Image (cartoon, rainbow, N blue to C red; front, top):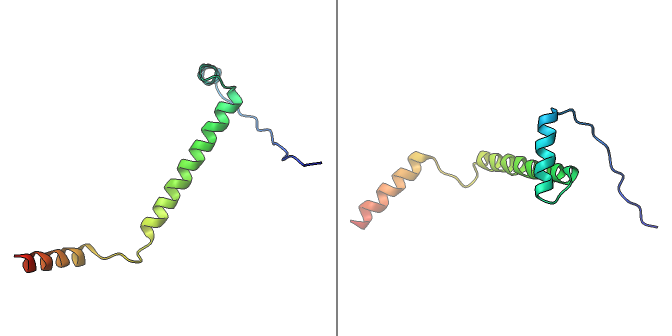
Length: 82
């Protein structure tokens, strides 16, 4: 018999106005509030992971050159072209 992942409940205190807006928006999309919130959380998490990985790649200096070195190389190329 296959085992299923056990779900955890999380209680969230939100203002009634926000709850009503989320519930209405989810309903307009044909989703339950739970499904809509789950999708929103996953999308936010993926955005945060992408941003974090992007920042990490910016910190990776391997294979990069300084601006001065780049500009000097461009000057050298334009002198040889002319």
